[in-house]
Length: 444
Picture 1 (cartoon, one colour):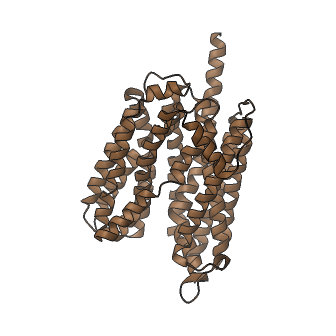
Picture 2 (picture 1 turned 90 degrees about the vertical axis):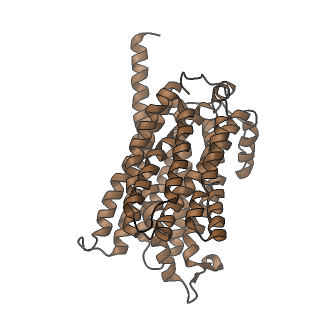
Picture 3 (picture 1 turned 180 degrees about the vertical axis):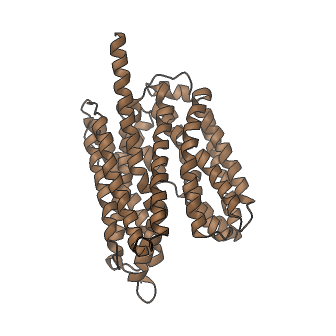
């Protein structure tokens, strides 16, 4: 192969990688502005406006406390995603046509998010439906997006490419969240009610998602795959994927380790605001500011840990991040109440390890996926992120119930990082990569 051909191939690969980054740029705004900050409180207030005298709403005739409606909607969206992801993943691998499926998922989610502009009055049912559609579509789109990684980056580039993707997403989340917070906090200056400001913030995330998805759809390309067996329905396809993964026990061993420590990560993310408000007596503005700080520093964290992976390998860098997570939780246990500065320090620690641990986990898993099964395997990986992170919140809740202390609840999560460290340390990743049929990079 001539030098000119190699140069041309490298240029095409870089162009496709830059297009791939932009899907994270497009969809991360939904996760940050919609799911993390604005939708939960707003949809709860809409449900409360529609509630009866006892505080219940009645979707499909089922009595549901208004304050629980958002959480139940999120849970239902996870069930929908778990049913759909294995089907879409298997179809993507079987046909090789990921891009039309990515477009369908992205624009379904973007349209549902944009339609949240209409969540006025007592339209809680519309809000729940749009949340279910948007959240499930987000999960399916992310699964397809992740499955491109082994195809667009050779083994030696994947840690850096994955880290840049996460960094792009956090940059977009930070940028749009700043604009949204300005609009929300100064809504009177713009002649808007608080509710209208929130609805504009929600809809703008959908418009952003749809607009920037055009970039990856123009630059990513499909790879034709040989025909495979028919797809089983729903959980049948998930069972078929798990059976196939049993032929690669070391890949399963890594996924188990990821399940454990990612459960800890997701629980810290979801419960940090509860810890800040209930235990540390911090106000809403402080908590939103901490979310923004996490987003900003996660950019530096993702890029910095990507560089560390080039020196020490992804596995060692992830193990180091789990130690850092443990130290962060230990520091959080001793935070004084009513001291927002120290809470921001805690948020900074979370931000610096959050992006890198997620990005490197994704790139390391990409080495363990058998060629031709990228979307199918990444559906299982995505479900571990979206649909199976329930043990951490359960432990957090039980610990608080038994002790009455959120400090004890937050420190109990150390078990996930400690156990995840042990399980990951025991995985011989070089052998796992060879067993999956992939080339082993120099640093892993």
